Image: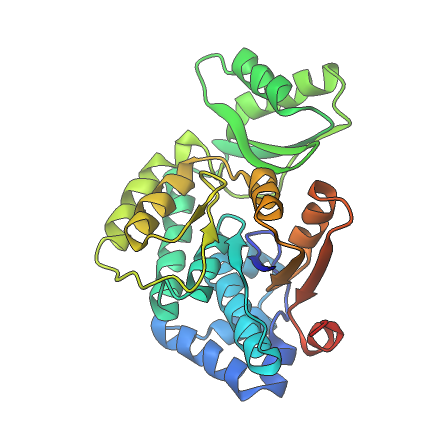
Length: 306
């Protein structure tokens, strides 16, 4: 079975998707569709925008989703490959839901633009932070976070792969956690260049605003299940989509468990669709010897095994 995987924030790069648009009318149409929905030229942002422009959360999210769906449509058109399930890392879960037919692309791209704005507005710049911690197990890191909280919020936000966990919360608490993690033998513990403490309880205002935005959207029938970030298990019930997307804003991304769940379900091949190959790297660390491929350009498409 094949799983289609979709990246989240941090995978963006200037020029992403440009090669696809130069070679495929369907890719160009996808960017035009997104631009019409957003009210601005998303292609110009992706192809010619600076790294700083792309790093703004309200820009990053629609840019990555649009590039991912353009790559998906070309992949389907050129190869006919179909997944047995789909998954995405944080923002990527929206791409996965578009891929399986649960969300309309135009609705999704408008929603993630708003989601990015809500997440940025939830916490004043400088108040929150995120840090990557390497070489500390889940239980030990949770205990570290509890010890240093001192009435503030700090907790695991991304369980990416064995030995790689991201924490998020108040900046001062995150810094205390870095110090203690290093004292307790962490290989590395470092602040990440992000603008807000994503997937922490500090994002509650964003979750509430997203719930209002999602309320009127129609959810379609799933062509195959999606492995969700919040529960690390598959779902295909349309009525569960909005609730899980709202919960995801403040919940940890259980990516390591999600990949293991796909492995248990019989996935033998993981195809990452969209900018970068972060997820391929994580999958290889989680499921040793796994078959991973990535598609975000004409060159990577040509290398794909059909």
